[in-house]
Length: 239
Length: 234
Ligand SMILES: Nc1ncnc2c1ncn2[C@@H]1O[C@H](COP(=O)(O)OP(=O)(O)O)[C@@H](O)[C@H]1O
Ligand SMILES: [Mg+2]
Image (cartoon, each protein chain N blue to C red):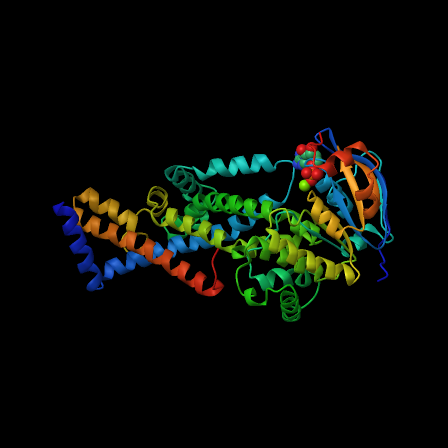
């Protein structure tokens, strides 16, 4: 798929909050294809990085984020799956239909397409249930369907499987790989090394708010160049 | 104990005989409070929602004021409305004192901060939950407010019901601005007050039981209606 918004160039982007620097400066390019995995210990800045790229964090320090089209238009072609899926107080069907309904699709049409998506992610039977009664795995699949329904060119996922068991994780990964094969650019964070090995085309290793490595997955897992990444892969506690 | 029983029996008698006076003052109670709740909700619900979503300079101040107003003593509200509406007051020309309109006005003043405050609390929680998602989905401000009002409608209904509960049982303000005039401004609470003063305890109690029954029935009715409408719960 040819995307219209990628590549994204990030230059000297810094995220600060209450005078504390949480991330950066980050300078990098998000290429127009691929499945990138953001790895790093807790508190490294994975969530902050993804939110920055998605435009949910204010860029301070004179840095910039440049999509191929104006930021406002680029916004509509991205989606985000949060670590703790946010379930709206509606039926599963209406949760998935919501992004369409807020973007000019009629309620009827939105529900038809939402039903198709629920079918795809295996939640057809739960369409009329309140989303808030779904299990963790079902919620995250619902969140994925909701994120994909407007056919984003890039999908950000922040540790989507952190709270899922093995089976739910496998199902989620299968659906994610399908979206990737269908042409969606994927940037996902995880601190699960096994998951990174299964999915990654390239790995961004992040530590103390800096991207230390950005390398093809094979290379990263075979011979990480920084001592922090080596320690992390060995399972040592990285401070 | 005897008086309670007598009150209960008297309440039963008044109800089964469709006592004309009872029906009249009950309906007036409902009319005054339901109107006041409707007006106070029309102001308080959007206000509470708006305060939850918008950031502006005096937001904290407005919220603090609203919370303080929630504790307004009804008699004081009654007194102020009385002075405003009395012949010599600024709105004296309208001749509203000792009318149901005056009672509704006083109750609107009492109920609006309460309803706004509860709505604000509920919507703030919902907004905290939805914030990232709605921002991420690129929704407009109006879409966000509409979504919060719709998804928070249960909580907003609760806010209005709390207002109803406070209004239907309120006596201080409506006594002052309504005057408890027979066939004109007498409502359940002021009638109870009157009968108690006269020593008619069983009648006063009977009216009290009717008042409680009315409050329960209205709550149940609204909850039932809302349940069948949304066909789900959370
Ligand atoms: N709202 C916040 N206010 C202040 N500090 C925060 C906030 N959110 C995160 N941080 C800090 O920013 C750093 C990066 O956090 P985060 O991006 O969540 O890391 P990760 O997702 O890799 O665990 C951490 O040190 C964290 O404590
Ligand atoms: Mg995180």
